[in-house]
Length: 328
Image (cartoon, rainbow, N blue to C red; front, side, top):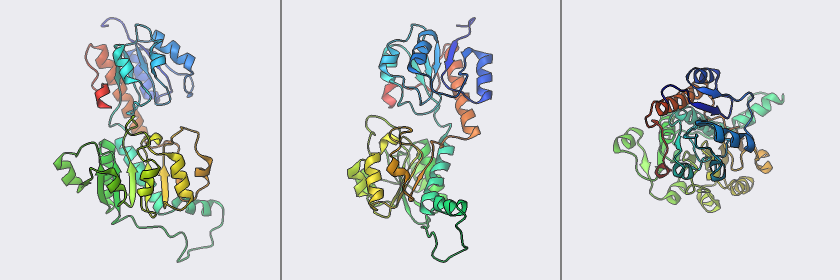
């Protein structure tokens, strides 16, 4: 469409710079407030737009795509994860899907290390003491945590984020292990001094820290189920900055309450904002509101990738970050 601006609908508020640039480039409809679209609003959007820019809070399923008009040709997701989009159905309907891989890798890896430290060093408990005005001074036995140097971290999913976590873990003196669909390139494994485990069961049984960094797909749903969680050492910690559905949250809660795991750091949850209330009560659990990618730099970079994907598509080319079912 060389002489006509693409019609673009954005489902959530984005950083101001990104929204302004979209206004300059496209015929864009921006979200007036920072709330998820209702189902009815999403239906209207897919009926009228050339391009939809959703986020992980929008469920783009087969039912919604079935109501899309002939105009809709690109779903340019704002975010790397696309488990909320039925990519297969989109492809069948001739609708391309793109995402923003790598934009939040460093930020999410930072948050992973922050959670590892927060759980093992009991930082929230210390904060609670200070904020409650209960601190009586230094004590040799108060709030003793554990040293992470020398501990083994098992990374589940060795993509961009997993590798970024591994680099940080090495800097903290941790021994890096990983499980992935396939081995990373030998040069990367050598750089990270990373040990590959073909068997996830065997790896997690030997780790001091397990870090979840794989995407949510049908094959990773409840990958850390009750059986696998029970394989972990009682003094081990689990951290998840990926997707909540990878862990059986109820099984994890039961084990933490029973003292069968030392702790957990969770930035994502199996049922979105509906968090198991028993999980909130535990002082060996650190809960964050999906903050892994929440940096100004990361969110701007995500926006730039969305803009590039749409602009490339508008120019008649394949979006650089196109997602196809075989990648999932």
